[in-house]
Length: 296
Image (tube, rainbow, N blue to C red; front, side, top):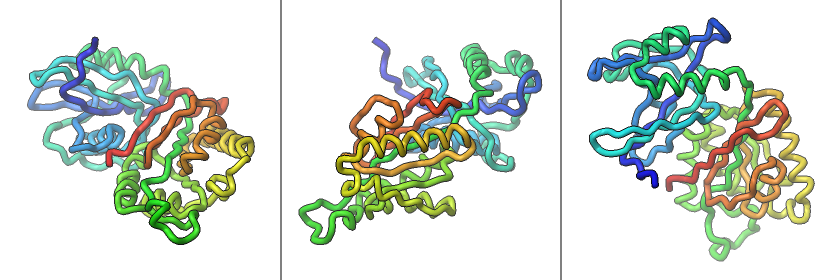
């Protein structure tokens, strides 16, 4: 039985160029006098994709959006077993000077030089496994269950107008960093207030409008599973054709089953503010699915 890691961390494999001209981002840590892939530990209950993006930017000055998850690395440290989670990272903002004193240099070596430069063999192996995935133009589609709403029994108005509870508002604020970590730029939602309020902080953060979809509301969705599944198929196709334009769709517990059926993934129960991150291939089929419950 594999021991539960005492320490977790997250990072990204970030490439520039393609083919024989492909380079990879590495960093030098003077305290350890080693060359590694950028990574670091979470702050508190920070979700690991958020950790990966933050650590890469702090240590190297490179801001990325995450793509496919990569195999994690496990090894022992003084505190016990450590597990480091990695993703492919795609540059999406101009480089700026890093502000972390843990690293003193970054480099973009060609792949053969990187294999010689990296200190740890398991990172060399991870790099080799990441290279074949780097040229796949995968889209990202996120589905999110709305955050915690006020109880039905304490709400006197129409149910579709029922707003988020205080906990739900905090959950929606925490969604901002998670969705940004995957580069989401389009926001779709049920027309119900509790769904709109769930994605509103993120939409404001990126300066985007929310595209309301009445079909995804509990009231409109009743008995229309095939239409909902067809809508999700259309969104899969859009994401596959425009992988640089990731999107999020916010829905309700009774509607999420039909939404997942349309995405061709196993149907699972989502808790409030939980997100599924789908990586969509060029044939509009999901090639990987990640699940992120709300930390609140």
